[in-house]
Image: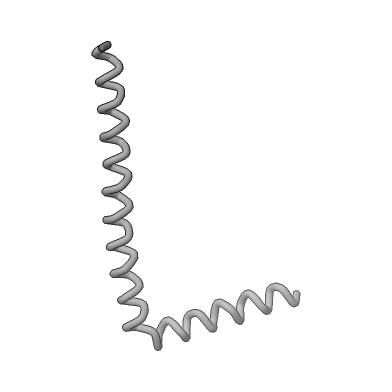
Length: 61
């Protein structure tokens, strides 16, 4: 078996492993952010309604 083939497969596997790891850590951050948003939903609702008002006024213009 060619050694370069083995090292290439290991590189591919480590890249894949890193992608999976990043996906899970990213999801954990996302879940934490969602939790913060839900807990601060009063402020979020005000901001969101402001954004929608801004968007609707732009679309009417």
